Amino acid sequence: MLLYNSATRRKDELVTREAGKVAMYTCGPTVYHFAHIGNLRTYAMEDVLEKYLRYLGYEVRRVMNITDVGHLTSDGDTGEDKMLKGAKREHKTVLEIAKFYTDAFFEDCKALNISVPDVVEPATNCIDDFIDMVSTLLDKGYAYIAGGNVYFDTSRLEKYYIFNDFSEEDLAVGVRESVEEDGNKRNKADFVLWFTKSKFDDQELKWDSPWGIGYPGWHIECSCIAKRHLGEYLDIHCGGIDNAFPHHTNEIAQSEAAFGHEWCRHWFHVHHLNTGSGKMSKSKGEFLTVSLLKERGYDPLVYRFFCMQSHYRKNLVFTWENLDNAKTAYNKLVAKIASLKADPADEIDSNAFEEGRARFTAALDNDLNTSVAVTALYDALKLKTNDATKLALIADFERVLDLGLIEAAKRLNEQTNDETPAVDGELVRYIEAKIKERADAKAAKNYALADAVRAELAERGITLIDTKDGTKYTVN
Ligand code: AMP
Ligand code: ZN
Image (cartoon, rainbow, N blue to C red; front, side, top):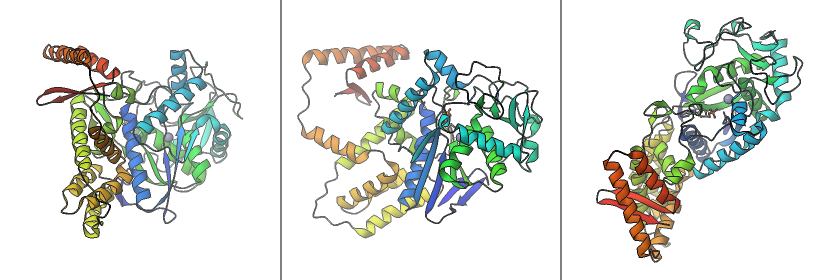
């Protein structure tokens, strides 16, 4: 399989350290708020990568951290701890919001058929590991203490900027959100491994350490959690593209300095989900969640399908119209699959099966091209073969794409067989009045009202479907 590697900046043949096995690490969520669907794009694409590797026969061990301490409001070393900010917002403790948003994250993953990794490790479980690695870095001369904090000394490395040719001058010290000089740093790019002094001394969670009471930096947690569960070598490290710098760059610096050898071969970065106004981000406060999709009557798997229709190395623009298009395509696909009639006596046509499968694997072998893989799925439905073979192909592809197509087709067949649920006259009049209200709102460009009407109906189990012949609806 060819997979783009951000470290070599080309598509590399995936060669794992141990034949047939993949050690895979994923940066997990910072659990101070709900995940937005941009975050979930990254996790959905990583999920497809994992499922495809398993499909190819690899034994995958996948580890994910949960960031419940140390991630500051800038990705560098300035700003308040995001967890503390979340706790203050909700008048709860840091651990309470960590638990709440971790559970919410996995609920969202479940709705999107994103599997839970083999190991999920909260950072606050691993304080001793962080202290060990920071001590090693100090012993080896890669770290120094200044103003009460422990810093990584990037000048000790031959090459620090792995993913991009940043120049020191171009680098904003505070990275992204605020630019603030930290006078303790010997070099601009140095970063904190352990804080005992920060502007925000009301940090709720603190631990004793050889350098005083404090808390770990964000980057050290991933190096240590990966080591704890996968040892000193990784095959694939994943994350969103914004993690490449400074987070992953710093992870590499620490891990390779501590271990004394190359750490990870392949760096897999998923590009962003953008809205019209730029990158969707939790810190901006306005973002789309899986719950909102559900409220508006979308099956979350339609969003997964929307993600699969584009390549992970391209930015993806989210609009409701784009999602509606994905919904229409998804529903048509489900209807097509529902219309296949497999007779148990039908034999699978092995030539057609292999032909369909070859297209699918060729797409994914070429840098996980899921949009071509989706086309291969449409092609499978057009093959000149029996329905049993087509169904077998869909089931095979679904081991990777996991779009819930077969279950949805089954539900559709069951629904069609059932009597249509009785909708009484009063309800029909109510729905029709609401459809009119929404159409009038749209005509007056009052989209907020139009959305509110749709949401009100969705709450009552009524889904609106805009078709070229007007707005139709279903009642659950
Ligand atoms: P966070 O919870 O902020 O630590 O982010 C979780 C994951 O989502 C990381 O891998 C980020 O790189 C990724 N991410 C953040 N924003 C976006 C976005 N708009 N589109 C895709 N991935 C994102
Ligand atoms: Zn990480």
